[in-house]
Length: 64
Image (cartoon, rainbow, N blue to C red; front, side, top):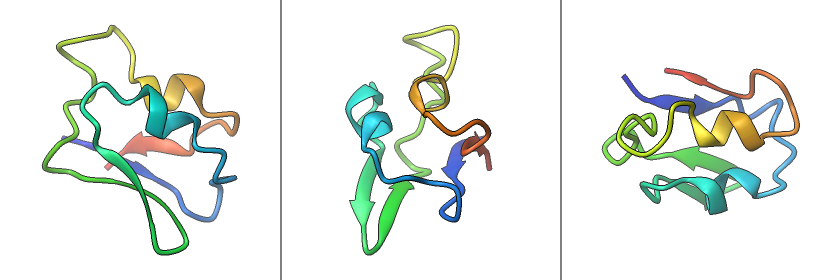
């Protein structure tokens, strides 16, 4: 499973892009998206998902 960003809640602050250890988050079109082929849910690097932990809006980075 991967994570996704709820576009309607995203403030486009970019915090998640810089914290993603697998470089799975990019700005595309009008907002940030998570590449499901690159997302590892931070399992090998962290105990929690970094996108969700740095996002200022709760429940914006969620399991897909």
